Amino acid sequence: MILVTGGTGLVGAHLLLRLTDDNRKVRAIFRNEKNISKTKNLFEIMNKENLFSKIEWFKADLNDVPELEEAFIDITEVYHCAAMVTFTGSENEKMQKVNIEGTANMVNLSLAFDVEKFCHISSIATLDETIIGTNLIDETSNWNPNGIHSDYAISKFGGETEVWRAAQEGLNVVIVNPGVIFGIGFPDQGSGEIITKMKSGFPFYTDGKTGVVSANDVVSCMIGLMDNNIFNQRFILVSENISYKDLFEKICNLLNKKTNFLEAKKWMLAIAWRMDWLLTAIIPNKKRSLSRDLATASFTKDLYKNDLIKKTLNFEFETSDKFLKDIILKQI
Ligand SMILES: NC(=O)c1ccc[n+]([C@@H]2O[C@H](COP(=O)([O-])OP(=O)(O)OC[C@H]3O[C@@H](n4cnc5c(N)ncnc54)[C@H](OP(=O)(O)O)[C@@H]3O)[C@@H](O)[C@H]2O)c1
Image 1: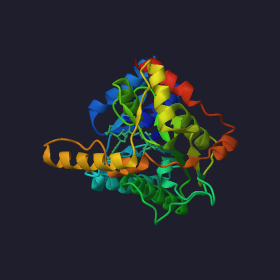
Image 2 (image 1 turned 90 degrees about the vertical axis):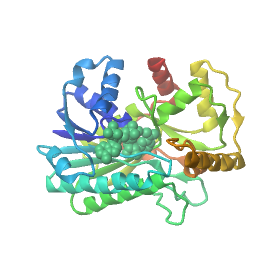
Image 3 (image 1 turned 180 degrees about the vertical axis):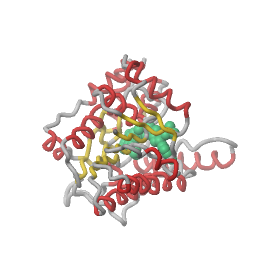
Image 4 (image 1 turned 90 degrees about the horizontal axis):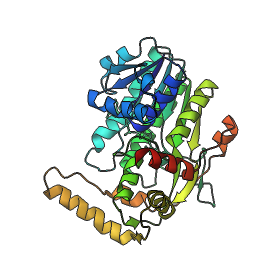
């Protein structure tokens, strides 16, 4: 039986859809019953409601070892998609605990229960040393300990380190490092929020670039790597590198929205994140919407190479034109 963490999130829900469609036995952990409805919603949008009841849901938190231990009974394979993704600063301590300690709990239990294989989702945020003389990043790019990193990147790097440690202790692991993941069904979180913001007329872009990929492709690669027993390697999952301006224009064109954005300069964002910090400090219950980490990340121009996964699985990625169109058509 396969254990999936993060099944109430974007990637985990798409993975559950694919695994149940392939008739594989799956157990998915959840914390809050309410969030299971997000996964159910995806199955409904995709006209696969009949598959939803095939999932065995199990209540467990990554940081509660006795609870989590129960989830491992009869498990042979693990896909670890759960993580806390936040750039607000205020929840950093919790994020480090979930993404590092929670991952350590997952690999330790996998070793204790003799799990045969373990797939971990990391992020391109953990790769930052460019190939000398270029701004290219591939799987040999290491973490630069002297670099400037977001709290999220630090937590994902710590999580990856736990997975490599477990590999040394005998667990068969494979790690994927996706760029920004776009997928159907989660309009209020992660990349879904970008599309939602574009719909309501978000007017700015920054002069930066990022790697993007579809949730479909992330899931295909994870399953492909596990099924082919490819271990002790990591794989960048990026369909293409794209500037924020081009990305926002593509989304707006698909939404039939105006595309006359204004460029937000570095100094403007430097003021904006400080204003956001101040307002969050004085307005009760206001959540951070722009942090220093997010502002800094929005100006990076590193380019991610995807040759290794293409060669290993003989894989072709969906283009952003295709997956953005699919998402927008299903979500309007
Ligand atoms: N989305 C992206 O653009 C992107 C890009 C690169 C890498 N990644 C990585 O891909 C993975 C999946 O991301 P996603 O976008 O699917 O995230 P997401 O939509 O935010 O979902 C996160 C999932 O993790 C679960 N979770 C969080 N804390 C937990 C805890 N303490 N115990 C158990 N479950 C917990 C959440 O459960 P609840 O419903 O209970 O909160 C939810 O199911 C993450 O590792 C992320 O770092 C994402």
